[in-house]
Image: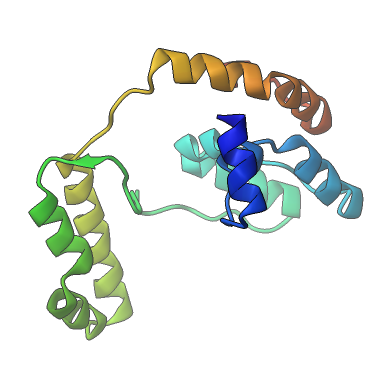
Amino acid sequence: MPQKIESRRRARWGFDYLNYGAYADQVAHYMSRFPHCKVYLTEDLKDKQSLINDITEFLSVDRLEIRDEVTANPSGIPKSRFLVDQMRKNRAMKWMVNQLPETTKHKLLNKRDKMMSKLLVKEPMRTDTREMLKTYYQDDLLKLESIIGRSLEHWR
């Protein structure tokens, strides 16, 4: 696989999924310019209210209350390609939704995303792929743990 990635990079395909997932150097670079920042991880979003509380406390601003749980842009393999395409790509539907007031539009899109998450099947990662990724990112994870001062054991 590394040869395939290298050939794509040389051909300027514009993506390198493996190296894009190596965060340590990117985070270190950012923190060298903004030393008083705080790093949050995707899994911190699981408890959104705690995350918002921590951010507002860090910034010394008034707390905010989250009113609504939103599942935006769910992913997976469609159980019904037709239904998913209609919800995502139907031009008439998009036009009608865009005519609605902003708050109504957001409520409708949230309902759509909740429905879509029920229409998508998440396939588990293959074991050999998981092991290859663990090996590939092992050193970067150790470096990132040191930079952000958090354990990333659950990423291993």
